[in-house]
Structure formats: structure tokens, C-alpha cells
Image (cartoon, rainbow, N blue to C red; front, side, top):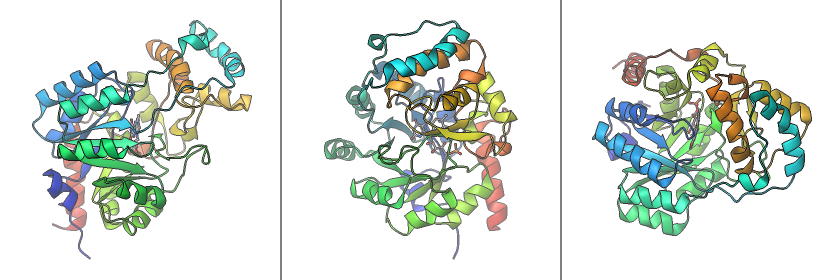
Length: 359
Ligand SMILES: Cc1cc2nc3c(=O)[nH]c(=O)nc-3n(C[C@H](O)[C@H](O)[C@H](O)COP(=O)(O)O)c2cc1C
């Protein structure tokens, strides 16, 4: 078997390298990083899920002003409706945190999650983004047809073989196989039956997905360098989607204390938690997560818990206090580099790949 990095996925998109910058919703100032990865020959992805339609339009236009290369925009397929069951217990449990950060305790009326999906979707179509990726389930047939009719390439996310088959049947052109090592939210479709998500390691997940779908598979979770790229290609993936590695890059918009926490962390620093958002996500453990776990309570459902903890996370960030921020990270953090440019990261990965593949 020969391994080539010039995969069908690369050819279809006309990108030089099978390296995708993962969408990272919630991190601001990312257009420069998205454009830098696309300009370096990979595919940058903007995490647009939490943006208002106007913020999304501006971010897309900024990317377009910085690159002529293809890029992707990611949305959550389902944001979900606010649910307030358990509110009074949760708010009581969070009060010490709000006190510590000197912020007011909200009422339920103040915690309303906007569902911008249709307006965000309209912006993606209006701006003719080349690629749309989604997580947390499937889009409707209508949305899929709208995107297809404009020639937009669609990528879905799966955490099991069954989900990947559904992504293919939904009409997606490629599927991200998200292993349990991945930083950020689990893409798992049904978190009612899987409260912590499906958590199959990338090494086990990727070849099983490859064997069960015909569309290109993109490996995600714990891939940090050229070794991870070559390993993923050997497992049959046609590309890798990497988030954590780019969080400490020169162009990253991540907060300085978040970057420091990442650089100080090890392979053993992260946990999967529902404490911040009500959906399972992998991040560096900190006081917020430990205190929440000590209560033994269930959070509010997503997205309500996420909206409720936003003030806490924002206040912590402005106070440079990483103990109450969501420090989403994968398990590969010892392989991080500080302030390396995205282009350098991509080139270094490809140099390793060339050496390992002896070409
Ligand atoms: C800070 C952060 C935010 C993320 N936000 C999103 C998102 O908005 N949409 C999405 O599909 N995946 C998101 N992910 C998951 C990534 O797509 C990807 O699965 C993950 O970064 C791969 O693992 P790695 O971080 O070890 O490279 C996020 C990951 C991180 C680290």
C-alpha cells in the first residue's frame, strides 16, 4: 500500500495539503488564523456557531480579504432549545463562583440563547463559502440541497461508525471522524443516551469509519504533528482536522492565560466535562470543573448551561483567571509549540510527512 498526502479530498478542493484547521467556536479573532492555514496550503475553518449573523458576515469577509484559497465555516447542526429544569439548584451551586468573580447572579429571563441558525445559514449561502462543516448531528434535506445547488462542499462530524454512515446518507461530501482525544465538544448526535458522548480513540475510530463509508474521512483528535498526519493517512484518512495544535500558534486569537494553561498542561490534564455547557467537551481540568464535580449535580441542558456560564467565563477571562474559563484542549498538548506561525506548523508537518514517506 502506498500512502500519498495528495488525497482525493485535496484534489476535490484543490488544496495542497490534507491539513484542516478545526473550527473553534467561542474563540474570537480567528479570521487571521483561518486565512493563514488556507494560505499555507491547508483548509482553514471558521467556527461560526456562536456568532451573530452580522459577526459571521464580517468574519467571512475578513477571511476573503486575506486569502483567495478555499476555507470552511462551521455551524452546529442543532443548537437546541433552552431548558430551565433544575435552574434553582444550579444557580445556587454557581453562586460562590459568581461571588468570587464579583458578577451578578442572573435570573432565568436573562439567560436566553439566541438561535441564529437560519440567519447564519443565509449568510453562508449569500457569501458562497466554499465549504460548510457541521457538528452535533445532521442538517435537513432542504439545507443540504441549498448548499449543494450552490456547489458548496459539505462536511459532517461523526464520533461512531453509525453516525458516519448517517453523515454519508445525509449527502455530505466528507466526514470528520472525531476521536475521544479531541479538544472541545464531542460531536455525538444523541447526548441523551450518551451523556458524555461516544468516546472512541482516533486510532480505533478512523479505520472502522473508513471501512464503512465511501466518502473521504478526515481524522480528528490528538493529531499534533507530521507523525499524526502520516498515521492518519495510513489508517485510510484523507486528511486531518487539528484544533489544539493551532491554539498556541502566532495567529491564534485564544486568550493569553488559556495559551499558558495549554503550554503548561500534559497528556493527563484534560477531562470530558458537561459542567460548562451541558454538552460533553474535553478541556483542561480547573477549579470550575472540580467544584462542579464535587456538587454531584447535573448541569442544565445545552445550550442553557452554556449561556448561563458565559458571564462567568467572560469575567474570568477579563480577570486573567484561567480557573473559571473553559480551557478546551485535546490530549496532545505536550506537542504544542509557542507562537509558531500557522504556515510554519503546516510546513513542518509536511516536512516530517515527506521524510516518513521517503519522497
Ligand atoms: C477550542 C475548541 C473549540 C472547538 N469548537 C468546535 C466547533 O465549533 N465546531 C466543531 O465542529 N468542532 C469544534 N471543536 C472540535 C474540533 O473540530 C476537533 O474535533 C478537535 O479540535 C480535534 O482534536 P484536537 O484538538 O486534539 O486537534 C473545537 C475544539 C477546540 C479545541
